[in-house]
Length: 327
Image 1: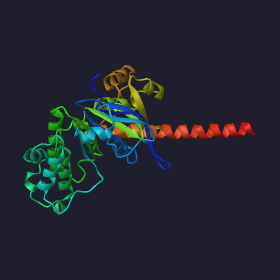
Image 2 (image 1 turned 45 degrees about the horizontal axis):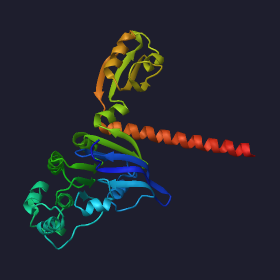
Image 3 (image 1 turned 180 degrees about the vertical axis):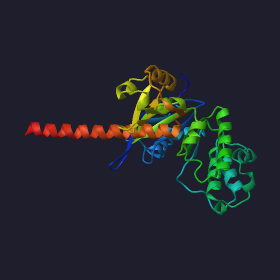
């Protein structure tokens, strides 16, 4: 196993009654580009704060390159671009970036950083005169001002327009191609789908999915199959549909009418369609479509919400039963 770049070992962190991170256990390895996904309040920013040593866990341990996060950061092995924290004002962009290069233990040349971040055209502009998207690009320049082994980005493309976002990710790919590990949190799921070779999904501070984009889609049911069933072509019982191979979820509308619309989520659409025809029915308007990462994300987190609600309900029932027995 390659050296661990970062590791969370049963890490938990609470703020008052809110548990932001709950038993997080994962490791990152060299050369990975990792997307950290989750709804608002899932614990993404808190996890990144713990990783960078900005906060201490209540339980468990967080390490960077086998040691304390602060030691790795002081050694210049980590570059970070966070949502919080402002930029120095009353200075030019090139002056701020030059300062970052100078103080970094393994700093790059200024011209190289400006080019990699795509901010050469605004290098002589004052920082307090920048747009939101331009500020984000300057923050990125500060994150890559030295030869880092790990780059951590928290919602890096917020405020950037589409063309600038493309330029940003092209620059990020170049960083990854040089062997650096990249960890980024984002709400733009199309970015995670196209950029990351590993996707982590957090929900209420817990890791509920970990794998490639394709594996995450497969976990949710990778493809959607839809068609119409006409009674004139012969009845097909719901039980027969539920017995089809690869079926994850089934929805039938138009029950009691001559035409029913069937929508199926499947991990193996080819086997499911083959099995459908073997039942002897005649599906009309058959469509097979891919499930995008955004749809997979919504499915996985939605199912987890349902499971959490069921667990809470079961716990309340068990507590009530225990109290009744005690009486």
